[in-house]
Image (cartoon, rainbow, N blue to C red):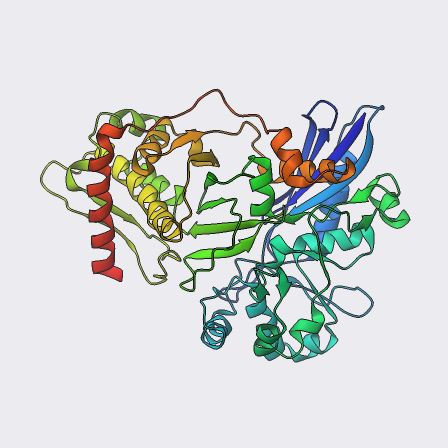
Amino acid sequence: MKVAVGVDAGTQSLKVLAYAVDTNSVLARTSCPLSLLPSTVTGRAEQDPHSWVQALSHCLSELNLPSSAIVTAIAVSGQQHGLVALDSSGSVIRPAKLWCDVESAPEASEISTVLGYTLPAGFTCTKFLWLARHEPESFEKLHTLLLPHDYLNFVLSGVYAMECGDASGVGTMDLKNRVFDKTRCEKVHPKLFQSLPSLVPPDKPIGAVTAEAASTFNLPKDALVAPGGGDNMMSALGAGAVRPGVLVLSLGTSATLFGYSETPLEDASGTVAPFCDSTGAYLPLLCVQNCTSAVNEIAHGYGMSHDALMELAEKEPAGCEGLTYLPYLTGERTPNWPDASGALLGLRPGLFRPGLVYRAALEGATFSVLHGYKVMQSFGFEATELRVVGGGSKNTLWRRIIADAFQVQLKFPLEPESAALGAALQAAAIAEGQPVAEYVRSHEPPMSDVIVIPDASVAQQYASAFERFSSRGKTLFG
């Protein structure tokens, strides 16, 4: 039995999924928690890369596969943007600065001015400049810059490499030509370009499992190591978003919206991140900071369960009788309003009903994503279908609001670990010698039988509510 292994190394946990190539099915899953290193420094978020190696070893040892299983390939999905600094011997110099580490905000502002497009502090090149300025001794030792998933690839294969999807999160790529732009790199720092490894194509292995890694991880020596990719790129594969018009909407603490594009979408405002995907195409991505967290705040405030509030909210009208909930409880990155706050506007006598406020929160979180989607549309990037994942996707009322506000049908992938599945599909494609996009299209990830069709009769109500949402937000924070 041929098995492809997919790994998802996230911020909070590392997950491993075993995929049976011949039956297009998931055989087993394991996971191991991860945590940030303790710190009292504002904005710092770091992890020890060795903890990822330990977690991977633990998960693979716990993966209960049948005796007939033969692992032919492995691929790693990883949290994007993190900076892993290695010396000339391949040893880790210091803890990895993660995507959510914002110590480099001043450097991000400076680099954005120099390059002429907005780069948030999450992007890797801002962390590189931070390291040069704040830890010169560590920076002097730095020989190679890797991203989190690239580091695990290196541990598995002994090869330094990046693929274009995750690499586009460094912030200095020429997207059209799928290469690092040397001029941009040197504007960030003269040492950046020479510190980056070679870029590899999406459909070829970067190498094979070494004898040392085979012993450490209980993997077959010479099993292929696929390029892997960033977690969003791998989630796109795991949700089957490998054709134009199919977008993935992930509803978690924050929300992301992304999908396949045959051409790059370069938005100088920074609203839409201009990523490559893991098939040789592109993956425009939107991220809003406040999503389920803003809805949870209402449930907590009223002391009621989501189910009870949803039952009440289903009886309330679309548009919430003019009530607008701005969900920016922790500031917002899309729009770029870091000092914004949450707000409940349009209150009149009798409108503080729990169900109405809860529905306003669902609409507000939806409109926040819709605002960014309209920027995508201005570049000609249109959705014909949203594949909805994440904790918020289980809320049936929220599903209905999203479908009606976007006027797009919704589908729901069955596999909860879409990034790990995407990595496994990439590994399977490479082991079978097929282009990744072609393989995923012919091995469609399973979907729920539930499809939510938009109701055109309420489209105008939502359009008016969205305009009110946008206007009120801009008045307060724009």
